Length: 264
Image 1: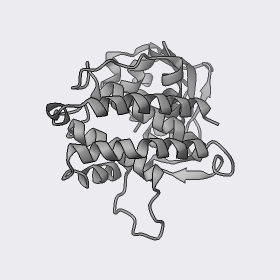
Image 2: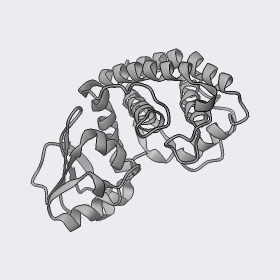
Image 3: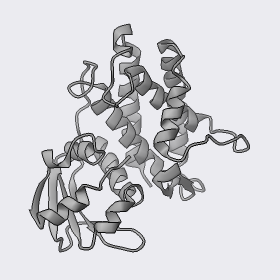
């Protein structure tokens, strides 16, 4: 199970909620690090995701007409563009604890081993959603909202194994399904070494129909090394991987693989 992911999500949600409660009028209107989204849009995105967990949609209701997870998130934000910042903050505040409660319930059977399909992102055991939320909260809070990369000046959560480990775990778990084009060019093992909090070593192994990610370095043709906090950036294409990755071994091959990594 992902008890670590739940604890990380709880801590990050608390820090995020403190920032939301402190935002001034001019801060709500600033552009966030997410292209096309203001700070208010970013908070609406997180609050709407909390609400979906706290109040799951009626399965008999018509499903949104979207093909991808990104389209769905854009739709949820667009539906809230006419809201006041106070309404957006209230949705976040009112749903954060129920959402975390839902994530906690997913750590126990029978829910834990049940599967959930996240649009085009793949199908996962329900207990892994805690890691997914830890990843999403870390990215949006520390990268897209807070300075130096975001527009809001508030203290940053310290990068720790406890906060970053679940986020990295989700990224590596999701990579085979979220980035299917990686499997089309991965014909030899590729090592990933992440340094700092939440770091470790893994190998991407070729496979059918998709690659697998295994712990440790298993005779890789090349190894890509970066800081863990940088992996969150380049692994989600927020920054180019070449700005922060050192490759040892077959650099051209590693480049072909890394060019296709785009984790959502």
